[in-house]
Structure formats: structure tokens, C-alpha cells
Image (cartoon, rainbow over all chains, first blue to last red; front, side):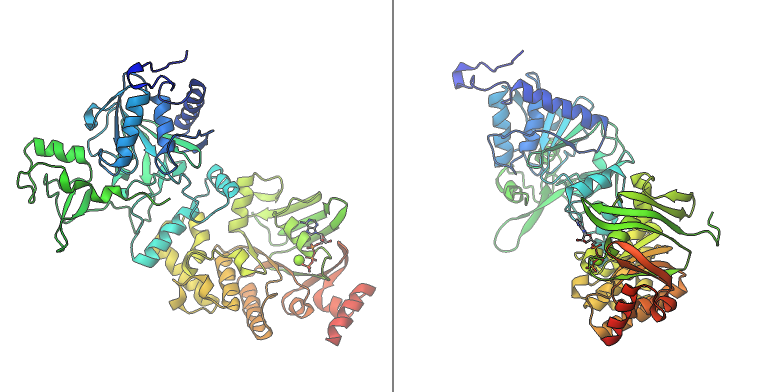
Length: 312
Length: 260
Ligand SMILES: Nc1ncnc2c1ncn2[C@@H]1O[C@H](COP(=O)(O)OP(=O)(O)OP(=O)(O)O)[C@@H](O)[C@H]1O
Ligand SMILES: [Mg+2]
């Protein structure tokens, strides 16, 4: 039952639906089922070469390709923005190879592929969040041997994760890890949500949507089924905390969202804006205003911090 | 529960073959709580092989190693589940390697090195972990102000003392050491030996120490086993073996040391 997108107009019939062949998609779906059955466990899979370099979300793209259907609506974000090169090219890739509808609205998407952020708007049971992951192994920092990290997961030997947090506090006075902040999944597996900011960690806990993680280069897939317990690691006397800002969003006035700092000119003027562009514009449409809004149209100065690539 | 008179460790007919080559052969002995056993012999005689096989780091070809666990009675260490064995190895046992780099995490601070075992057994209070680490740094005669420094900024002797602190923080009852003073120069060796002797006495540690330095063996160990070509050829109280060696090879070993 090969599904081919037959679209002679733009000559995409050479590709199978969503680019990957059906056999590969079945293999990835089997991997996903296993990942969902063992929340937080990294399942190896025979990752394929994709027509884009590693670091551009090949793991996420393969997962999306395996779960997407013709009726899906896809949203792709990089940082929180839909309009960066990476997000745009992945969105176009699926528009072309799967002929699916795309959107920038969180509420309208059935599948959201992301590199850094979890949308501010609460996700629903009928949505799937696909993460692009560069480094899936949370223990890698202190234990380079793969055989040893596998054993540590198998035997729940996670003391090393706290060695890393200890070191953070000893050096900085507090837990300085701000992204890829390790979590304990379902009281069993330690998982790296890399490279999302720790601000988003609490959103993973008990999320209604299915969360799928794809690491292309390291060929690993892991998952959080809906309503899974996700706890950020910490110490009793240094509890987990999310980032907070003294400022509010200059455009929409939000105080509850993740803010990016934007340099406005070379005189040191700067402002903070929501990293989630959809969240921000929705608030503005509803009439919310930040201090720097001045009612001019959105778009211009927004994207500067988003264009930086995740270090890999 | 451990009874004082029961052996802590019982090694029975232990043999380790590397293909056709003998690593060690037919070794049996018992070790009591608080007892220090020295293993001496020339290079290649099988000391390290024996130590690795006893300490669950290398499964022997034949023989048994039984350990009197704290809560589970006497257990064959190679019949435990891997999880149990690894837990034993990082709580009730300790390993001091000749090269401190093999026993330390060089990319985290001294404090994190000492705290690791505490965190491994579930300690989740930063302040308590840090003060235990600080306390242990003091016991191995390293200044508190080095707590947040990386081991790579320490001298060889300090690294070795840090390795000892890192191992003893969980109050193990049995410590394995393979040439712990090997890479150090003489004055540093003497200080380390002094420290070790104090700790072993104060904490009532059982120790198996491999060395080819008979002076180290004499200073630390109550009993001695002499190995040659993989076999134990003589054993007994340290003073007895060194002052009145029975086996011709031991006599040679003792006399060659005296000539140095
Ligand atoms: N991993 C191995 N593979 C094969 N042979 C080995 C291995 N390890 C040790 N041997 C052999 O086993 C014998 C005993 O070696 P072992 O390292 O136990 O001696 P040792 O008494 O510790 O020597 P040294 O004082 O030099 O450290 C030697 O013949 C050695 O070549
Ligand atoms: Mg040796």
C-alpha cells in the first residue's frame, strides 16, 4: 500500500508520501511504539539519510514523516518562531512531499515539530509534539562510554546526574544548567529534553499531547506518552526553578512566557519579546499591548536570536 | 548479620586463565573484619589478576569468592545480580588504583569526586554532601579551600589522597588497593602510608593490598601472601614471613630487598 503524492504540477511524484519509503516508516513506527511503551527510554533505530544535514532536525523530520498523514496540519518552530530558515525549510519539505496543510497557529496544528521550545499555549490530546534532539544521552557529559551509560540506565544508576548538578552549584552558587535540563520520567528513566530551555520542563509533566523525540545523528528515538510524570532533577536544598524575567514582553505585555532579548540599535537599546511568536501575536490580536508596541505592524526586529544554531 | 568471628571474605580455589596462560591458580584464603592482607611477588606473578578476580572486576575461570554482606548474609559475589554487585562495589567495597586518574573523575571538582558515592546511594541534600566532602578532605590532609578545585590541579600525592577520600566516604568495610604508592616519590610515599595506616586503624578497615614493595607490606599488613607464577607459595603473619621465610623464593625476595 504505497502512498505516493501525485502532483504533476510541481513534479513531486518522484517521492513517496512524506519522502521516506513505507518500509522505513514502518520501522520508525515500530520504534515509536516501543518508545511510547517505555517512557523516557532511548530506543535505537536505523536512521536514514535525509536530504538535509545533521543539526537541521533530521531525527525530528524522520519521526514526523513516520506519523504524518494527509489530513494533518503541521506547524514547525525553531526557538519559538515559525519564520526562521530551519523552520521554514522543514515546513516546505512536508508541504511538498506530503502535501499537508501547514500553519503557524499552535491551536490549529495536529503535529508540531520543534527544535527548542514547547509552545506557550497548552497542548491537547489530539496533538503530537515532535522534538529534534542533537544529544539524546543525559549521562554523556560524565560518562563517554556507551556500554557504561546503557548499563547505568538499565540498573537505574543515576547518581552521576547529581554529580553534574553538584558541580553546577559548587561553581555558580546555583544550578546553572538552563537548557537540556535532565528530568526523571515516570520514576524510572532519566531523560535529556535537549535542547529546550528548562523553562519548558514543567510543561512536559502530565502533558495531554503525545511527545516524541528524534535524534538523527545518534539514531535514537524516545517518547513521553500523554499524561506522563516528568520531574526535573534537583537537590532538597536547591530545588528546581524555571527562569524568570524582570521585564514583560515589549510587544504583548506577557509576563508568563519565555522572553528573548532583542538588541534594537547600536546605542544599547534593547527589548524583551516572547520567543513564541504565535503566542505573542495572538495576544496582540486580543488587544494586549507591551510598552514598546506603538501599534506598528509586527515582524521586523523579531528574529535575531533565533537564527543562532544549536551547538552540535 | 555479620558475626565478629565469621570471615568477611572467603576466597576458595580461585583460578584465572588467560587462554593457556596462568593468571593465578588455586588461591584460597579468608579475611576477617579489620584485617590487612598484603600480596607480594615479582612482576607478572599474578597479584593484580588475583585482586581483580576477588574484587568482582574480572570473573575468574574457576573458584568462588564469598562476601559477608551487611544485610544479606554470605553471598557468592559472582552469583549476585549485576545490580547488587555494583551496589556492593560502590558502597561496602572500595578500590584504590595505582594511577589516581583511573580512580578519579578528572573533569569535576574534588568535592564532586568525594560526593559521588553519596549521591549514588541517594543523598540529595547539597549542603550535607558538601560538608561530608569537606570533612573527608580534612581527613586526608587536604585544605578545605581546595574543595572546588579540579583534581588536575593537585599533586600526585594529593590526587592519591583524594582518591582514598572518595572511596571511604561511604564507610566501606573492605578496601582493595593495587600498588597505591607506586607512582609516588619516596617522601610522598611515606606520608601516604602513614595516613593509610591511621585510617585503616581508626575505621577498622579490612584491606587487601598488592605491592611489590616489602617495606610497604611490612608497614601496613598483618598477614602476607607471597606469589610466584600465579600461585601462592607462602603465607602467614607478616613478620614471620619476612623475618623467617620458609620458601626458597621468599628467601630470595627478602634478601634482595635487604640488599637494596
Ligand atoms: N588481560 C590479560 N590478558 C592476558 N594475559 C594477562 C592479562 N593480564 C595479565 N596477564 C598475564 O597474567 C600474568 C599475571 O599478570 P598480573 O598483571 O596479574 O601480574 P602482577 O603480579 O600484577 O604484575 P605487576 O607487578 O607487573 O603488576 C602475567 O603472565 C600476565 O602477562
Ligand atoms: Mg599488577
